[in-house]
Amino acid sequence: MRKISLILSLMILAANPCPAFSDPTPDAIFSDGAGPMEVIIFSDYFCPPCQALEPYLDDALTKLHRSGAKITFVDLPGHTMTPIFAMYFLYAANAADSFTDKLTARRILYDIAQTKAVNSEGELIRKLKENNLPIERLDVRPVFDQWIALIHRFGVKSTPTCIVTQPGQEEIVYTGSGGIPAGIDQLLAGLPPKGSNN
Image 1 (cartoon, rainbow, N blue to C red):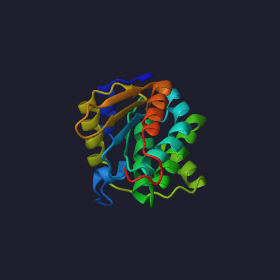
Image 2: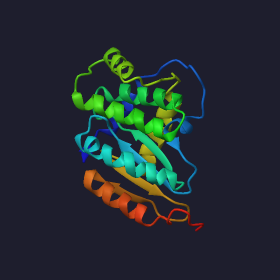
Image 3: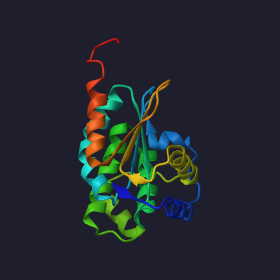
Image 4: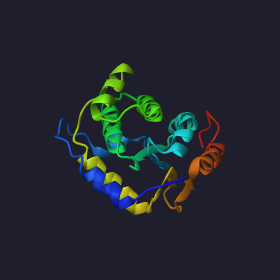
């Protein structure tokens, strides 16, 4: 797991306001699905364990989403470029037509972060254009505020972390690139078979 400084992270997020371009409901940008189960992924594009986890999450979160789970992404910055990557994920999510589009945006951003070839917003924009990733700008400050609230609510201090909430049950916490797949596999194994009315 990658340890982060929460105070530093919040300062970085707060230092990156942007002008308003549209006014969607903030949680509709970084969350998808109706629940009642919510799976919250706290990660950082530049965190090696998060990078190792991303291919697994792509498939596993798709299955959970199809089962009716609400999937929520929270980007925790442990790298100086992460707030910019997080902002462009939100722009891409704002332009997305589906949950699959949001996953595609995250995959592209993770791939770019792994190359370590991007050191500025301009370079990131160029890479996103090369990958034909559509974006629609918005004021990210309300989203960052919600992310900060989630980080505080669950006391998250490292990435990757996965938290599962369900009404009337205690939250479940999975951490690390080994613990999260094991936990999500258990969730998937407990889902009713396709076509079941239960």
